Length: 233
Image 1: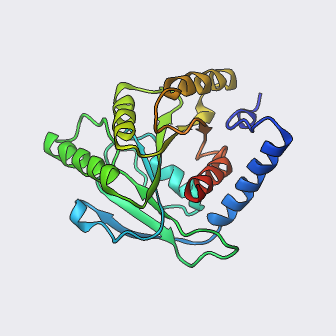
Image 2: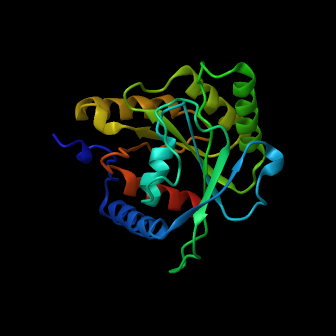
């Protein structure tokens, strides 16, 4: 079986499938240009002024946030990747190089420090945690947070703590399963169902799971469409 057939099941009706295909197509255009790194933010006072809608990526250390941003923008090295957990220690902002055409909205992507990394110094972890939580609670241009979950490990306790924070702050969030090519398709289907059940009663969770593989490119266009939907709604 091909894992690509299972990463993001399309809605059922013809009308839903047509809308979904349109979102994916427009999402590809949204991410089709060149992208640039804007700045790294080590503390709230260094945040750029609020401007375009922001889409943030959160997740445990080494879950693949930077790799997914590079896959979305088709820009190798835009977001710095590392095999060392805890490498991202700032809020890193990225925007397109040029203005959008075809009526597409402006957008900024935010790569957030990973959480749950036990080997970093406690004061550093505390500083990252404070920065993350302050940003999530106080940024009016933040349209949605994509919480990345490693498909090999599923939802962990510290993920659920982030869900709790986002629910309390009424910040819209959506789950993305990363590294979906690393498990077998039947296991992925089961994980998708279990993960959706975990967030079913959470107030701020968007009830649609996107499964991706940055390495293979699976599910990346689906995620582009979901991001466009989040910005426009």
